[in-house]
Image 1 (spheres, helix red, strand yellow):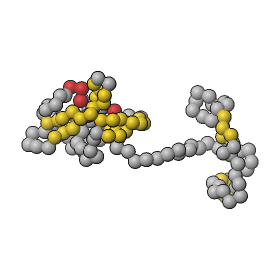
Image 2 (tube, rainbow, N blue to C red; image 1 turned 60 degrees about the vertical axis):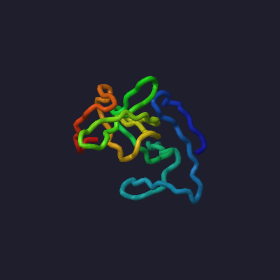
Image 3 (cartoon, one colour; image 1 turned 30 degrees about the vertical axis):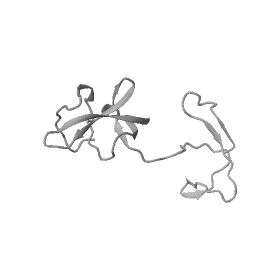
Image 4 (cartoon, one colour; image 1 turned 135 degrees about the horizontal axis):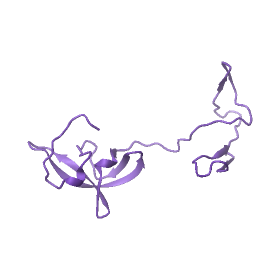
Length: 132
């Protein structure tokens, strides 16, 4: 990559990128008229860069309750009667309605997905399977 500029796309999340392709670099072929060709100098393309990808434990934002500046989820406790226990979690990135859980929650935990603001430790809940 030679240069980036927000010219023309400021505030829209778009940038102009000027890249230099060297011999031996991987190049995406462009299908034009049914034939594959190397991209021509100065063409305009639309694309995206994936800067980093990691697997993450995420929950819907509705599953997280806030109290005194900390994030909590209600975890269903095993037993004859389904009760919940409030667990403090550390949150990370957000994407759409999903929130990354960095710590404080086991991957296999059953979590209350909505309505946590109306619960307290020991509240009895009805578990509905198959919803995410």
